[in-house]
Structure formats: structure tokens, C-alpha cells
Image 1 (tube, helix red, strand yellow):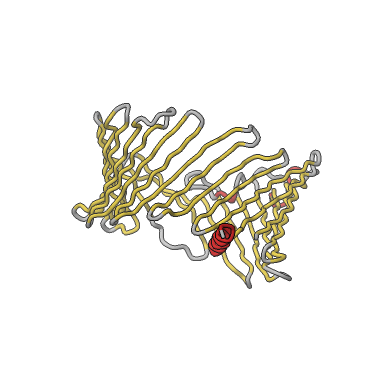
Image 2: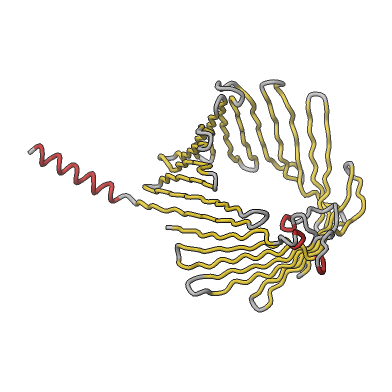
Length: 361
């Protein structure tokens, strides 16, 4: 009779576990790089991610490897426990066989007030950050309390309180900060988007800051030159001090359009005042053609780019040619390939050839 009871309990437990919604998913993303000159070298960049999900909780392992071996290992856990949301991240350094960090986060929302906590442990250092925020009518309040951060104890470190409220015709964001060394740090009041009469394309941001021995007022201009049609201009405006405006600079021009399903992108940048687009790198001009078509089993993407350098000795100063393609062989498998040719490195212009694939399940 006892054996039958134990067997029945085991069956019930098994059915209960089987009834939970469980999934096992992940991805394996790998790229192999072959550099033919000056000597043939082989590189590999691989990341394996596996996630197990059950009853609203997820457990993830993230492993990275390269040609030298195991480089990174991270474990993540996230889920909810009643009204609490919890998360944990554990990071190790496999190459050095060392523990890197452990972070635990928690959150709770009660009656419109949100609380969160963030505990971080690193070798020799611990910290605990507790935040709270809520809204009462037109007033927004948030509190950020930090403990520890310098050694393994949890002594008071810093607290920052943010309050947002309307004042006259503006929305004001106020911040007050205290730390363990100086006590009071500062209190600031910020207003964004102050309109300038008769200049609808210019607005000002104001920041008023008080410390124990100073007060500063900073006005920062913002310019809206309107929407661009087809062409994009990179415009900068010089300013100094609070209200001194200088010259306007046109530092670059871009052109984007789609012709018969093929995207064309041209970009030139020669100035020093506006932010240079990251896609240009060390070059000043680029022309790019991109297309996406239906392949045999899935989407086929292809991009070819030409980069120009003022110091290039090649025809029309073309300096770099890059081509990348990807094709989805199956729903869970994508193949990629890329070629980079640095013409200024002639006669050894063939810079890199990459092969890659991604498997998901």
C-alpha cells in the first residue's frame, strides 16, 4: 500500500512538471575570418546562447569563443515571484579562470509607486542601489540611494533625488544630490525647449545649478533645420558662452533613394564641426548599393560599398571595396560571407574574407 502511494505521488509530480510551459531555445553565431596577407591567418568568432524557459522564468547561458579559446561565460536568470520581478547575472573570465561579477536586481510596484534594488558584487567591491519613484498629480518624484561601491561593506555612498514639476509655463526637472564625502553636492533645475520668438526653428535648454560655493546658468541652443527630402545636409553651428552664436557650417551631404527595389546611399563628409557619420570610418566619401531578394529558401541580402580617401593613389581615389551577403538556407540556418579589398595596400590588396553562419532553434 505504501509503495502504491509513493508511486501515485511520483506520477502526480511528473504530470505536474510536464504541465509547466517549457521551452529550450538558443542560437549559435559563428564567423570564420581568413586573412591572406602578409601571412595567412585564421580567426574565429563564435557565440553560443542557450535559454531554458519555464513558468515565466528564463535561465540563459552565453558562451563566447575565439581562435585562442574560451573567452567569456555569462549566466542570466530572470522571472517574477508574486509581485516581485527578479534578475541575476553571473560573469566569469574563463581565460584567467576568475570570477568577474555578480549582479542581482529586484523590482516591486505598489499603488503606483515603483521600487527597485540592484546588488553588485565584484572581487573586493560590493554596492547596493535602491530606487523609488512615483507620481502624485503633476508632481513626479524619484529617489536613488547608493550604498557601498568602494570595498566589501555597504556604507553610505550617494543619494540622488529627481523631482519633475510644472512651474508657470514650463516643465521643470530638479535634481538634488548628497554623498558621503562632502554631504551636499548640488541642486539643479533644468528646462528644455524654451521657444525663441520669431525663430521657431531655434529653442534653448536652460540648466541652473547651485553648489555650496557657486551658482551657474547654462543656456544651450538647439536648431531644427526641418525635414530633408532625398538629400541630407550635415549642418553645425558654432557657439560659445551662453548666448553667443557664431557661423553656420555645412560639413557634409548625403543622398538616399530606392530604385526598383535597390537602395542607393551616397555620403560625403569634409567638415570638422558636425558629427561625422560612423559608417565612413577614416574615409571621407562612400557610395553603397543594397538589395534584398527572395532566395531559394529565404531572404537574400547583398551590399557593396566603395570608400574614397583623399590620400588614395587609385583611379578616382577609390580606396576600399567591401561586399557582404547573407542567405537564409532554412528557417533556423543563415549563411553569411564578406570580402574586403584595400586598394591602397596594393599589390597585397586582398585584406579579408569572412565566412559565417547562424543556427537557431
